[in-house]
Length: 156
Image (cartoon, rainbow, N blue to C red):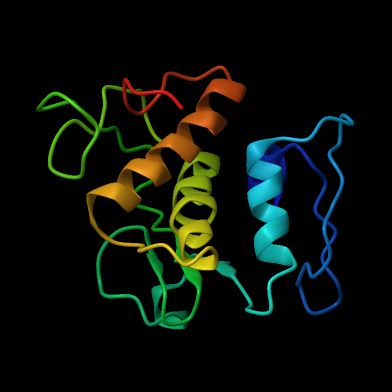
């Protein structure tokens, strides 16, 4: 919860069941794209989740990912601290997921939940190069705000 709060710049106050179902205000009085995305998910008729336990999702085995079937962002502990190296020009799925420093928890949550999860909430595809590009762009909003090196060379 703390990593997500830092990522969106707002204090998240879940209810007794651990859910947020109302829009929240920015901690500093300023809105942000990531806070807007979080609020879109929080006020949706669907329930969006973040989990660190893959057995709690319908996700395929593997690393961090967003699962549309149960609106869950799975964060693999193995991905925290990993780094993406640019192998080809661009920021598509097959080319250039970098260069950047080691990935942190906030960046992964933003990428999966506020990138792919937001695509899901707005009726866009959550797979393929376009969705990956949008999720990386959302992630880079977080990295810029945290003073970190961006995952890709493109900007919004």
